[in-house]
Length: 174
Ligand SMILES: CC(C)(COP(=O)(O)OP(=O)(O)OC[C@H]1O[C@@H](n2cnc3c(N)ncnc32)[C@H](O)[C@@H]1OP(=O)(O)O)[C@@H](O)C(=O)NCCC(=O)NCCS
Image (tube, rainbow, N blue to C red; front, side):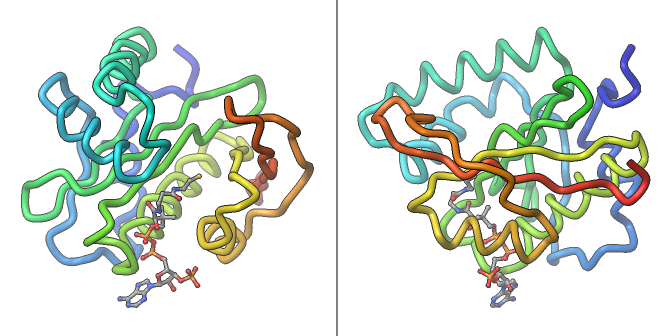
């Protein structure tokens, strides 16, 4: 198995991120079948309202079955509050998406997940790539704060014809 693709990315991040400031009550685990309904409701708030979010959650669950360890769930006092999805893509780790429940944002959960993913990426000598909607200034600011750089612009990246910034974080060991 590709070393950048552990069977349990959540456990890998947990093991590496013990030195990072942890928001109180936050734990990580793999995405499960039972998380689909919760993920659908989160995607409905944080992504395009017209999508069939339950179908999206079903598809993401299936992808996680085929490529185990793609999705990490953040729990606060036992309840799911955040999701991160990342998988190897050529020489990179591709951060597919990251979402935190609106009521739980700005409490360091996103930073804990992202810095944990960076610690994992550094261990397996991979840079991280991601895409951010050009209109999502707060998400872009968040990534730039954690040493990502804009490396390009992808026209029509989203179905609605919207552009994305291509962003990248280089592992110090690459
Ligand atoms: C972008 C996102 C993942 C960040 O997650 P988060 O948990 O809110 O992130 P953090 O709390 O770690 O940091 C966010 C901001 O809160 C600030 N913050 C962190 N802890 C804080 C606290 N206790 N009190 C006040 N502010 C705090 C951080 O400094 C940071 O500031 P910045 O916006 O200037 O960078 C989240 O806001 C989100 O899900 N947004 C909607 C979906 C989205 O846009 N996803 C990314 C698409 S690619």
